[in-house]
Image (cartoon, rainbow, N blue to C red; front, top):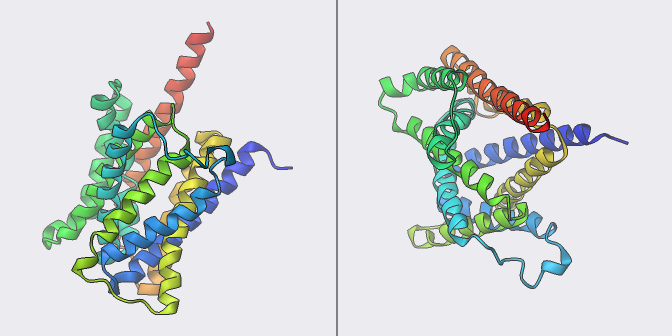
Length: 293
């Protein structure tokens, strides 16, 4: 019988595998409009969510006490997902994944304004290290005026606000309800792009597009379950395996070889987010000690 921490580890690892496969499929889908891929991500992402809705809630599962906060979460999430889809299609896979690790940096800054949190010198140091890593990764794009390097940064900003709103929603809202509204919003946004031209997929492509949604929806739920079962300090570092997967997939599928600047920048960004993460764990433990005294 596996312990909760061991189960949490397996859930997190499965989540990373699902997210990595989804990224590969999104990058592969460059022949289809972004809006069309978004629709499949949202609509098919609803399927795993419905397996989590309690039977007694089927009649009114969609009811919420915080509609405005759900709207804010969905809008930020839409900005983030559209940005990362565009980035995945136009930049090396390892570059996009490396820059996505900068999300905790922006979350730290936003928490000052939205959660009234105080940021100490260690986390400010982590923010500076992280920004240095982002600058190193994006330097080739800046020098060649490649605007696509902006999209992973927009993704990080959007995901940072998503993290803030989810933290606020989680006090009263179940995980499946938060995911439900986001998947619905993605589906609606995707449908609105039909007039701009969708492409009729082949049977194989249709299956692969559906997999984008199934993998994305499942990965989100696995991630939430991992955090629910295990110590956050144990499972969060596993997320950085996605960079290893990105390098492997990028090399064998698209012959992408990450530059030393990408790897150096990724190291600094990962170091930065680990400092922020470890500092939060330390502060939480200190708070618990004070409460018990």
